[in-house]
Length: 424
Image (cartoon, rainbow, N blue to C red; front, top):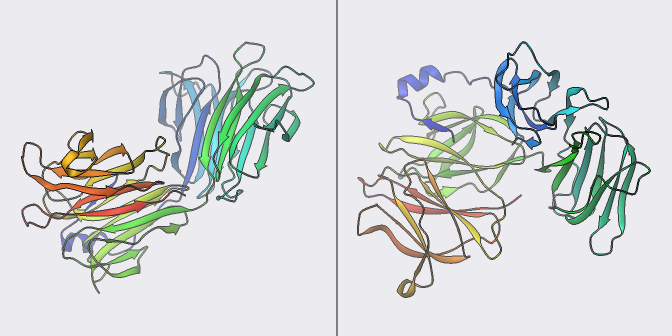
């Protein structure tokens, strides 16, 4: 989580008189498909991933765009004795996957694949990608509908280093099978896989068929070339103007309001808050904020524990909750000690405690998964009187419901604000 603290006016004017220049970013996922090799991964000579285990897939990693030199070495081994290296050019705002894999002859290599993030109709369709990076013969791909067993797509003769991409009309469950070309005995499947609408599922054939280590790894990502941002204002009594990259984007932005979802081109943005009509040279608070492809974030202007203005950045978790459950997040963004959070089912006179996570401090959040309605209570640990008595809340069925604690306890201005964060 990023936190941009306020600066004294004179200092902020000196430091931010000119808008900063930001490095453009690119996203990368690393897939380790070399059997039996525990490795360290270096990026531009710097250790980036330590003790990377075989047959695992990283989360998305943000790197500076441009020429990137990658190397893998044996875990704890010397950097000047790499197992494999790769120099690749990453364009700004692109998303790639780098595989550590075996070639057809069994040598170790690093290989880069570009991920297409603009191919689907996000409301319905999905994409299945198969990438052959195993020491194995040519393979075929078959995709069938689960219920009718109807063949929907196929590819024949996929060689090491090649990939095949299939656009599926709808997201849902599909039966997938990978077979050596000319064989009826699959090396993978038939296996039922779920591919949500608006997403891509990439399968990586890794390992060695002859060595008995063949496997298929999965990588799933949202098919989107936009980033989403919601700006939330929680500084009591202080309307502000919001500047983005030096331009006034919002005027007279009132406390206890939010912008709703805004779509941005992925990248890094200079964001500043000023008094209404004020100059960007004298911000209340200012910082740079990276918006990642396919991600939803909230930028929250609020008070820190000492009642000074700050901006907090939160990445939103849009993964699905369990059946008949909803996701609720409580964020402590007030000038107050740590608070406790409790969620109850039922009515006030017959309430049953469902969840009570550990107390949270300023800048932290409590994550709850609960029924779609209930009672939320927020209080100071050890106090018999809650800050907010159990209040009925109704949680969003999709996305998540966020409850903010804003204001100052000493100034008697503590309040709550509710934000709905939709899915993509």
